[in-house]
Length: 247
Image: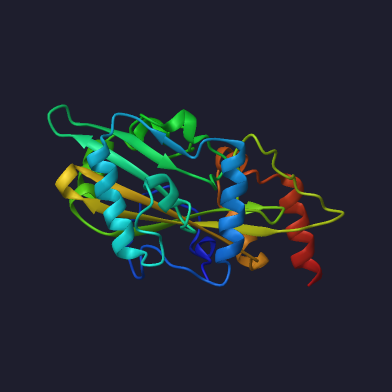
């Protein structure tokens, strides 16, 4: 199981070579698909900005090659609906050294709005993340179009068990009288599509129970801005401290 919080908190890209499949089914497949269908009832999951059908078809062929359970006759939207993962396509324009989020099929965002990020570059997309500096975002996007696949992990404490954290769905705040503590881990994969100057961005969610000792230690190293961004309050840290002191 994935426990990236044990390595501390970092906003660096920290890309590493992918060590597993791009897409896979597990015992929670039906749960994910049901949750994805529920998300699709609330909002349009497929959003596009300056992307051709040829590029969508190219991405679709990559998905079909790496997820042999999907119905190969379906369109891009319905193929994505058969995946536990969320999918996005990021493009670059070499003539202008620009990059932008060209398509998203996101059912399980981690407190961000895909509808506000579509069409934007990596630097602007990640601007709200405290301490993250992507001034060379074109270089990072261009590298992702040529090399890989790569993986990285991001994580957040959550206080309820669910996958979809779109901001339209209010987050449950920490309740010390009824403490439920999980970690929402997001495995992020970049898969190059060099023939079309783009890359797939694949997001896989995991809900795990944390090691509270390591979680407390990591949270204490975060800046006040990072704690606020992640929803880590003094009340939550005090609860962890008292729990550790009594255990």
